[in-house]
Length: 489
Image (cartoon, rainbow, N blue to C red; front, top):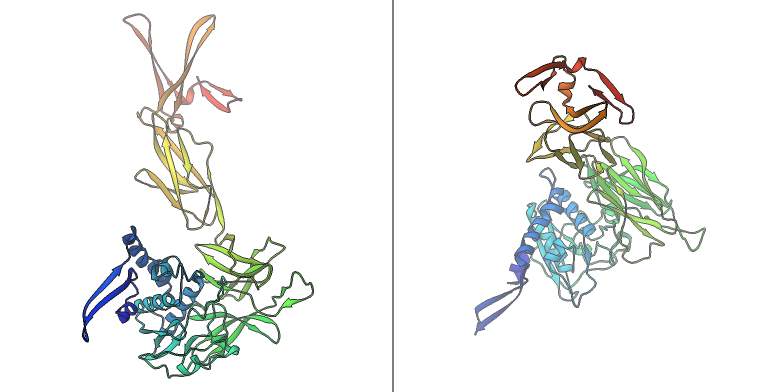
């Protein structure tokens, strides 16, 4: 049953089990299931989370190393080790969906995701350490990976270590502070021996404290040179653990309460968005284009009494980690800006015959904007445009995809009865003769026509009528300056 639990992390809702035996035979095993009222909903959420957060990061072109390190980094960045071990250890659901848990769930969920990508693994535990981790098969050989010990505790947003990634049993049982391995592992037995030492000497890999971001087949990471105090953006070749410097950043995080001193370490995070890299200095976030090698300022800090000690990009938004020093505990990230610029949506104020409203006044490139188009009584919807693009409706709803520019929405409406005019008011004149004036609006197609006319039928007595036709184009006109309108009489 223990092996069953390890092999099927998705059965997280089986809480424990009781077994009965007679002599040397187990006669009955009784699982106990969680009885949450929303258990079925939580089961769906468990399976949806990998599809939304993790598996889209993987594609079939990746080799085992790339899949393993990509999932390792994503899990460490998204999750944290729970503090309340007595009351809330979590389970595989809380780890996958709510992003917290203990080492067992770090290991089990990592194993579950690797399995979805065709990578075998073995969950290893040590009763002596009260700890669990994974052995991951890369190119037919097994290596130790301890993702919980690669995740700073308390959690440091934007930081992911690799000191316990892909090590042999010998290296795993040895502390090495120079390679970010402060502690060793002991008291465990496993089915698969990790006796290959290929990655043990990969000093660059094990010193990375940012995620490895892959752009066009090449990994990027940030390393810190303790001698020059330089932070360096490098490309990384995991075939031989070599790096190539692509950009040098002279970032210095000053000690706010002791001017003149700086912290001698790197506190930059690295993130990938739409093929470009983003990293932070102490007071700015920079964008780096791998295609051109150009660095540009992307966002500036507006906080003067704190410094930036990391960043994350989540749901198309940039979040900064502000703190007075790097020695703080967990720091809630602060929203800095949208990753994509926002553009305005303006509805033309000259629209007549109906009302048009947009669901938002600003949107980012690629966002969907929905328009509500409601004709006045007696009118029908004609043409609706976003800039010069004619929109079509689906179930009486108009939508368009926001371009990288401001948008003006225009619309025209036509008279539903087809005549092309409707009475909109009247007045009574008593200047010598009694007269009644009727006011009507003309459809623009009628008003601009060379052949459209008004046909008047005027009674002369009870049995006789006079008629008169007046071409619209030849009617007398009167301009009303106050209303800024021209009237045909």
